[in-house]
Image: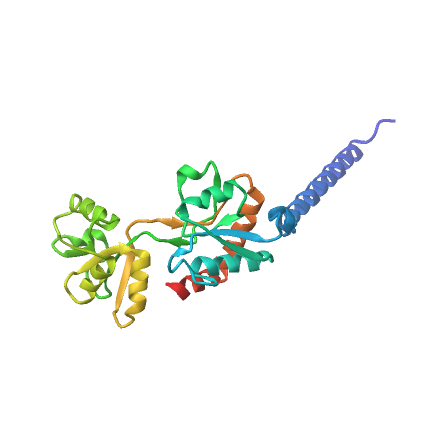
Length: 268
C-alpha cells in the first residue's frame, strides 16, 4: 500500500530538521573550539637552548648601555619582560650593531632587541614583531602655541639639528608651504632649548631627544606631534615562525596591560 502523502511530508521534514540540528551542533562546536586558547608548542621547541638569547648593541643609551658588570636600558627591560611572559630565562649577548643580523643567521641569538629599525630589505631573512617604539621626527612647541602641524609654520621660525634628518624634512617643507625662518643648531638639544627660551617658535627633532629633553625640563609646558615614523621592532630569524609568533604575542600582552608604556616611561 502506498504511503500517505502526509506521512511522506512528515518524514522529509523530520530528516531536514535532524540535518539542520547536526549542522548547528557542528558549527557551534567549531566556533567554541576556535575560541579556546590552547597551549602553544613547548618552550624547548621555541628556544632550543632553553633560554631566550637576546642580541643587543649596548652602546646606545637609553635603549642599552653596558657597565663593567651588567647591561641596562629600555631594550634590556623589554627583553626581561618578554622572557618573563614567556616563562623562560633570558641571556643578553652584547655585540656591535654590524653583527646583529648575522648573529640571527648563525643561530647565535634567538631574537634581536636593539633599537632595531624595521628594514624592508631584511624581510627575506628576518621577521619583525609589531613596533614597540616610534623614533621618528616630532614637532615640538609650547602647549599654547598656535602651531599644531608643519602646515602652520609659514611666517614663523623652526629650529632643528643642522645636517640631520630634521634638516632634510625642514627643507622639504620649505618647498611645500610659504616661507618660514630656519634656525639650525649643532645638536637637537640646542634646537629644543631655543624653543624653550623663546628663540624659535618650534623645533623638529627625533622623538627620543625630545622625550629626554622634556623629561629633564618638567617645568616647560610643551607638547609634540609626530612628523615622520621610524619604528623599532624585535627581529626573529625568518624560519623561526613559531618563535616569532610567541614573542609577538608576549609583546602584545605587554602593550595591552600597560607594561610596555611603563618601560618606555621609565627610560624616556
